Length: 134
Image (cartoon, rainbow, N blue to C red; front, side):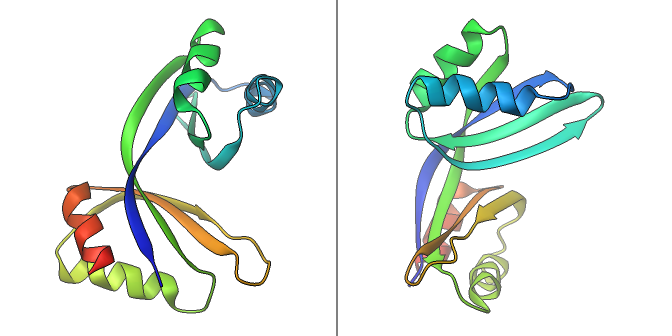
């Protein structure tokens, strides 16, 4: 059974340097903040990090104090079983509802009965949540 809900991620933009993700994850860990999901990529010489954390507000304060560009954005958090075809089922629902996915990233835990988590943003997050839960 899949369950979609509204969520928030933080988007961090930094100079693309070796060790930036290591530094960010250290700063957050030192303050007891858990990184629940992460996506990282480089675009036009800048490193972009998308995080879902246990405390976005506190994480943003920490990272802004380090002079990083940080914003909070609306996303969908989709928890589902970790099994073959489950992503197909979810994206088929979005296709049927004519929802355009802007981006998506996810994680799985290879432990029995542990859920897979997908984080995504769509052209209409509310419509996407309704389609995924319908």
